[in-house]
Image (cartoon, rainbow, N blue to C red; front, side, top):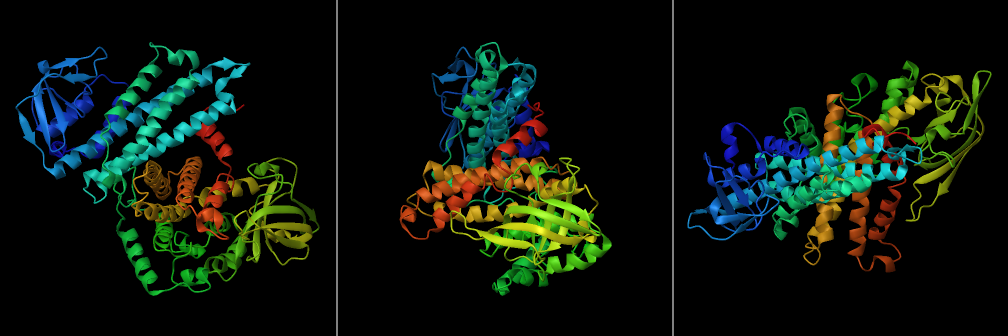
Length: 612
């Protein structure tokens, strides 16, 4: 279908080039030439393409213009068209008898390629616009400080950046699918283009806002970028309703998105996935799901063998989450982050005593981090552990502790001196210790999964210390970095299930809000796949977890708002799954790191904006 393959290139190569041409505002007629060649084959003539009969990118200097219509293409000499003043639009004044027929399959492939090239143009242009705005915000001063240090400015730029990263990953993932002729390639391209059009225009609009007055002048490149984004959005071929209502595709968790974008499982991952699928097909859920999974070898799969794991790639953890979510099974136990912390920082005795029983489910653990006065700001933890002889004596209170009622041990972040960061330490202690009281917290959706844990003169031996005294901040950051990633795949699987139910309902499937949600789920899927690849390759940067968290929250809230609006009876029932999921989604922007703090991290640690 794609003649570019004859030159040894790929669809993905074209997409990466399109991003860079847009980022540099290159005058090279790349997009128009590529599309023209796809339509009429190799030729020495300069051909550009009009997708709607009126607009053709890169038209200046063209010798012929191809006008695309459903089922066929007209090619006419350039002297049969009139160029407007901005040198990017053409108006057809005559039609040519030179007609080249296109088969339905080729037409669909051509339109998918067009969507991806324009999507890449929107992404590359938008990212460059945000980078320009960041540079300006670091230099421009108001009220005695760089405007980039103001939180309002940082959050605008962070929001735009997260959306553009998601759009870039979505377009690149869809490009790989198109180049490899996967069954969902055309729907993936349509959805990637939808996300790119939204993110690309918003990025340029945000940059224009940050640049203030100068951004609204003809001479500044930001105004050129905004016009380019609007043009690319206008050029995007409207996808068919059939494509946007198609089943949401899956970006396999073995995605090597930074190495050729090969989205298939490798040999190890494929074998592991097949073994898990076989086991799931013959093992119904029983009361102790953790122990059942562990006994079959599906808990702690990426842990080192010497720590009681199986030494498999981290992507195999994601495969477990994905297969369980896709097939309606309960989630795997949320203990990977605790197990990794224990394996990395624990003594030989601690690892021998705790790791195997943690992994096999014979002893359940919870994590004690958050406090009434220390949520996102863990440096504000006040639960105190004072040394008294050979013991630590603990006093304080933890809140929002997940599954504390079902747990027997707790990994506790506490304060051993007054330094904000170096004064934190981690202790391992049994929850049946004298002086510990666990109280239920009932959520707005009726769940009792969280608890408040109070400590009054609780004594534990010094051997309960994980790592060394004062290492608590390092341990906490390491633990939180592991917490996100593979588990996200399980959430995405659940999102796909909810979205698929919406798309299978003919009364609502064609609604723009339903189709938008489906597009953003695929963008999230591709973005988390990139993160998993980085983890597997040892190039993971913990700050990218903030992008994943913000994107996960956005999709969670978009999806369940649409689902609730589509379930008109939910608000009038005593119990409603739609309402419960909606309320949980609202909490997603608080639990696991508030969205506002995550935006600060993106702005300061990824974009490089100054602290206030």
